[in-house]
Image (cartoon, rainbow, N blue to C red; front, side, top):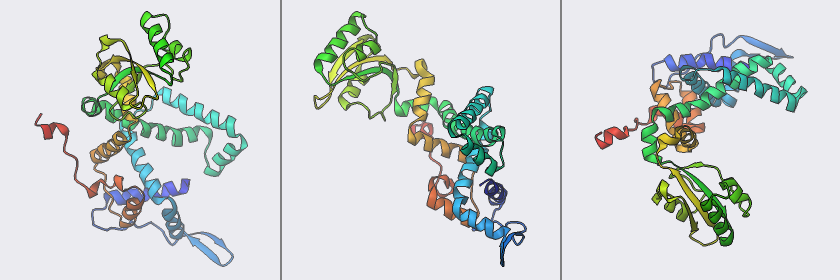
Length: 301
């Protein structure tokens, strides 16, 4: 795999710089013999073709996003410490198996943290940066609110919890645990994509004001009872949590990828890689579709 990354990495430079349609990347010294077994020889080109067919598209996909993340996300001391902690965890959990894996890759523990874990961390943070840079627009689209939702299967339990919450004798977590609810009683961000609660409860939440305090509402089928409190409907009040919640929405992740791919003018010219990506991840081929029109332009803002 490490050799494949080097081969594909070198090939990608050709693919991204070449300008002709349906180009095919040429591997230097493709006839160079890498190994011989009996009367059979394996050349550099033959090995590349085998590895390209196996992991070429996925390697190109990850390498492209890693390259973008290198430009966009700064590595912090906290990230480095987290990467080292992950390596320590893997060593503790998998012992000799992990050590053997590193040896087969030709990597030390520090190199694995630097070359494998940190790039993945950087790439994961891209969507958060996208949300930060487009926060207001995404909030208009997904309408996040901060609330506490307790779920009960008994109306009596819900009513008892509501009473304790209104008189302040119990915290939300205590009201839940002491009245047979599996809810944690913590604040959470709810968007228009939230499906974990009945529509009746979500509708009531969106009609509430912060001053309403705690409210009890049955589900539309009467099988579940909710005790609700709207904490804030202003995303600026819970921005960090809103960014995290918005980042977890799959459509936002897709938008983020396209946003950064277009920012760096990603284009695949090699026809073999193009076809491989079209089969495995056609969304990455932004060259096949026009850029979306920004919301501000469509509304005339």
